[in-house]
Image 1 (cartoon, rainbow, N blue to C red):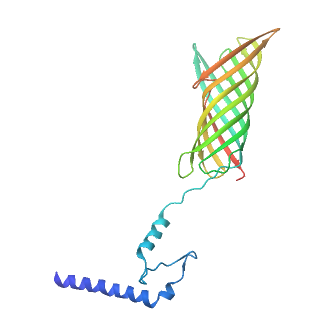
Image 2: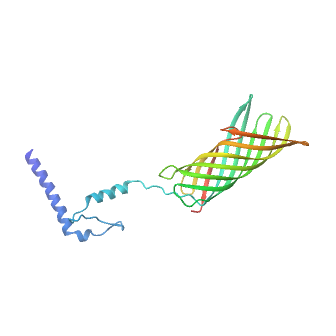
Image 3: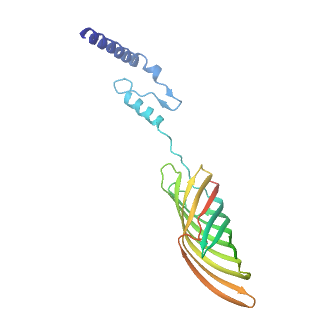
Length: 243
């Protein structure tokens, strides 16, 4: 055991001596750049700074954070689908939409505010019921970044719209027009610095409609809280334009 320990220490001593001599004799040769960016570090005593080298190695092994910044503008396409049952009748609803948004806040990695314009078409069908609505509106959306890798945002928004459409119920037809507003929240996943996908969920909606039939008309106001056939979840895809 003693002989083994002696030879082990001798080998360590030889390696250490070689390292020291290399530092003193070849320091000028080592005074070069690593990857064209960093020079090999030395301590005040002229030895290799092993701690600094270790820090560089650990830094190289860490994954780089994705620095996605919010685009100055983006376009989006959205779609929603829903099923509803009322008094024994099943109802199918779907909605398609498009929008354009422009950033009004300064470039900020942690959040951004947008104003935009949107259009959508909503259709609902049941056994004796048909509903068609086309909506045009303005909106405000705030993106709140919640992950360090810039992949996920929460979104909060307000929409105001004007709408036209028609309703057919048991063969009786009515045309309508009106206006409304909604509070919206959602989640936005950044696939890369140009493309994002996500969902928006209406929290609270209000509408005021005027229905016209024959020579008469009637006004109806409605408020929806949560999810239903008129307040459906929308999935979307966004394409960023500009930096």
